[in-house]
Amino acid sequence: MMCLLFSKIWLRNARVWMRHIRASLIGNLGQPFMFLLAMGYGLGREIPAIHGLSYLQFIAPGLVTTAVMYSAAFEATYGSYTRLTTQHTFEAILMTPVSVSDLAVGEVIWGATKGLVSGIIMLISLPLFGVWPSPLVLALIPILFLEGVFFSALGLITTAVADNYEFFNYFTSLLITPLFLFSGVFFPIDSLNPVAKAVLLALPLTHTVTLARRFCYGDLSGGWALNLSVIAAAALTAAWISIMLLRRRLIR
Image (cartoon, rainbow, N blue to C red; front, side):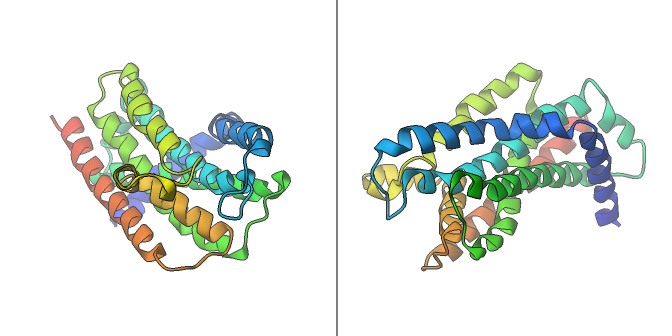
């Protein structure tokens, strides 16, 4: 029953999104595409190969994961907060048999879905830039969805404790931007000193970037199960916390 109820939240958000799909996709995909052009075609021409990959090939899989991160996180912050406050959508939904848990799960899954759509569009677009993924890249799709669940849940956690839109500057400046810069998207972390490498390996996005690079180029060497376990554990933990905090925000 809960499955059907959270799916109604997903359907409601999907219908609204379809009315503004073009502007939404441009907003979420614009930055990754610009980085792919500027860093790959611009700066990348002057950078030697990394692990046998051109710089454009090196950063492309990581930028796919950042498209998922931005899309999922922003939907569950600005989008969910608008539904929570100015539109009072959550209030209206909770007048129906839908529970707070159904609502939170629906919001998290919807944010993850938007993230996955952005990631798939980035993957499909890579050949336009001369980057040809391996067929194994199909195995990356459920991983991108798990990543979307993690960042969507993080966004909903922030929404549950936010007092206004300005609060999201903390989320963007202190969490999303550092993850974008220091999760191995733009440089290999295995060349860093042990302390710095250990810190970066504690970041969930680092593991998604590693798997994206491996599956994009057909590398199934050992260690991927650990990467996947970290992402799954982070997603489930963040989703549980988001349900608890949204319940506290709505029932007080």
